[in-house]
Structure formats: structure tokens, C-alpha cells
Image (cartoon, rainbow, N blue to C red; front, side):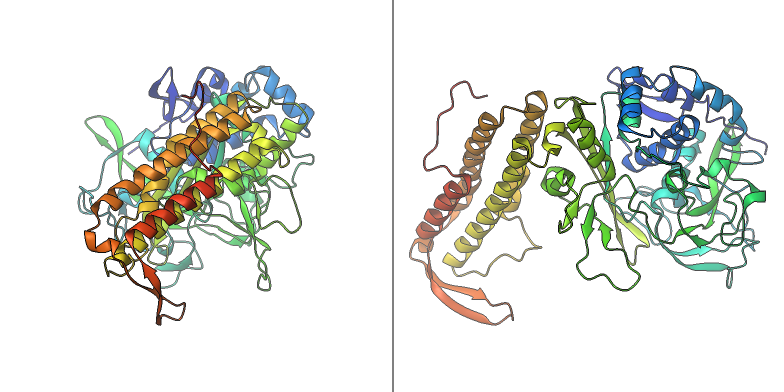
Length: 552
């Protein structure tokens, strides 16, 4: 069927506007983004994909990257992305490249087909949907009953797949010379799948896009977004993204990176009661990044001490499933480029620190950090978990020598030490009654439950430091007071539930690193409690519980 869905003026980008969620068009998001509270985080993979694959590269391609902090500052002070109508004219001039269907479908390949003309259910594009080996435990649908996607949903699903798609075997595209036996093997995940994505977000869409805009003093030769690539310009090692061929190749620049086509996709529209929907899709292998450039804006980095030959010296830091974003504060705040540093913050947060130091942005500017990642399983062929969080980020804490950064690093270290103390208390109490320690991956441990309770405290610390970066001493004292109370409260149920025999004690039995058992000194409930309470006070540097006048 002939179908059309104009991404320029149709409503398909989820935002939060006036405290309510709604969809807006690409034109509205860019030209009136200063009036929109922010991008909706309900589907975090799609949110990141829409920002990276469309909003940010359209802005950069139309307006160019700022060449220095002064130009970035002028754009910031303008208060909107399109004061001179440049984006409006760009979207009008490129409208034919932003149709979801038609002769050159956006982020897809027209006429893409497999050798046997096979199609797949559209659930193949959805991280949480059952398809093939990827069957979520509590999925309400099976592959035999695929969802029906509206055009707006299908557009977001395509973009998310280009960023996060699973690895392993893909159907072979007709016309692709690298197909063997109808398939393509060795496919990596989408290029964002290996990152712990870190997105700085402002008070509205305008601020968010500018906070994600890199300052680039020199234009990068040959760089362009996928929709601006021409078939005549492609070569053997640089295939046109609108055709079935693919290649492993270097990244040309920031626009190429943001709009990387890691898959060749074709949505198959159909009419249901006069409305265009999508139920089937063709998805095949796409381009593979030869080496992730270190100007990748949305990830922090970890130094590799002894990289193998040909491997980069730094690797992206991935988020850990089940851990709140504040527990990974160290790489977020590692804005100083020290040669021996083990971790380095993202390019965008390092840039934000420079803008702070040069007073282009205020030290108390309200910025949030959205962290998004995927945990893959079974050789990255399935998605096991989607990780997403949002925390306030005090801009003053990006200063590597500032008191706000030191406070936050102290809080994270103290919280982890309290977690370990709580877990050891649980182990000691179990051994006091003759039981073995609880395995790290089984059951509910005291310290692991305790650190979850710290999240509201840390959120308040971050918000307080945003409002008043100088209020370090009072904020730290309140943290320590509240953390002491929570730690003692967390231990109380375990201490109250031990039987009387636990106070007589048992010989401590620990396992050495080689797995052999070894006997230690006796352990009993009283000694375990005394050790725990003393350790908590020592960690928090509190000899006795203080009183705080006016503390909330």
C-alpha cells in the first residue's frame, strides 16, 4: 500500500509539557523546545534514540556545531534553538528525507527484502517484546501474536533498534554480497548498546539539546547525517545507508556517529480501518563501527592498563543493573584529564565543567543527568534488562578541586562502606547461630537493603547542592546524621530476631580465597552488634549522634 507519515509535522516525539505527557512534531520540538519541559523518559531507549538520531543531528546539520565556548554561550543566551528561522527552513528543504515510508523511508531501506521474501513481526524492534529467543518472563504476547504499532510508535522503534538492537545472526538482504546461506553472522549490538549512556538534561528541550551539543573548532571532512548521504557518493567501503550493502568502517564525524545505521530496516505498512499501522518488518545487517571514537559524547570512559594490540586505551563504562546512578558518581565527576586517571567523565560533562569555569553557565544551574543502558544476555542475542535513572547534577561538583565534588565522593564512599558493614553484620549473626554466610547472589542482605534506602537522602543532597553549592558542611552533617539513623534502623530487625543461643556464640568459620575452610575466633551476637555500631560511627566520623537545629 502507499503510505506516508511526515516526521516533520506529524506528532511522534514524546515530551513532558506543562506536567503532562504528549507527542509533538519534529518541527515543534526544535523550534518551540524552549516552551517544552523536556523529553519524556517513559521509554528510555526510545528517548535516547530520538535525541541522538534525530533532534541533535538535525540541529547540528542545520546550524553547525559551535566553534568555541563564546559561540556556545551566545546560543545559550538566545533562549531558543531557532531565533532566525534556520531550522524551519532546513526542515522545509529536507521534508522528503523525513517520511517514514515512501521512496526513501527515514532510517530505512526502500524495497529491502530477503532472498526468500521473509518478513518478521515488528516485535523484533521492541526490547521488551517476545520474539525468537528474546522472551521476557512476564510477556503477555508471543511471537505469534505481534503488536500493532501506530506510525509514531514504529518511527521510535526503528530509531531504538538502530541504537540498541541485539547481536547474533540476522537475515541476509537480497543484494548484499556478504550474505552466506541467507544469513549474516557476527553482527554486534547496536553502537549504543556497549555504552553506559549519560545524557545531561536541562529545564526544557532547548537546554537539553544545547547541553548535548559538542563544541567542535574544526568541521570534520565528509561528515553528514544518514539522511544527507547520497547513493552516488558511496563506495565499496562506504556503502549508501539507503541500500542493502553494509561495511565495517571508521566514523566520519559526530553527525555520522549520531545517525549510525547499524541495521538495514524496512517497515511494512498496512491499513486497518483506514489507519496506517505496522505489524511486519524486514531487518538485516547494517554498518559496523571500526573503532568507537573518543569524541563519543554520551559515555564515561575507563582506562585499560594493558590493552591488546590494536585495542583502544579507553573503554566505555557501562551501567550496572540494580545500582542507582548516584553510586556511579566517580566517573560522572571525573572531569580532569589526568594521564594516570582510571576513569574519565563523558565529553559533554567535561565540556560543561569548562563552561562553568569560564562562567558561561551558572554554578547553580539546574541540570539533571539521565543514565540509560542495556544488559544483554546469551551472547548479546537477548535483552535481559533496561537500566534507566535520573539524578540532579550540581554543576559546581564538576570542579575537580571544589568542595561539592569532595562531599559527593565522600558520601558515595561512606554509603558503600556502610553497605559492607551491614552485610558483614548479617554474616556474623548467621555464623553466631552456626550457619554459613549468605552467598552474595542469594537472599536479601542487610547492607544491600540499606543502600537502597540511601537513595532519597542522596537525591536531597544533590538538589541542595544545586541550589546552594556553598552549603557543603551543613549538607554533609545532615547526611551523616540521617545515614547513622538508617543504618541502625536497618540492623535492628536482624538483631531482634536472633535466638538466645547466638549470644553464646560459635567459632567463626571463614572461607579462604582458595575455597578451603579455616577457623577463626568466636563470634556472638553481642560482639557482632558492638562491631557494627562502632564501624558505622567510625565510617561516618560521628563519635555520638549530633543534634541539628533546624534540620529537616
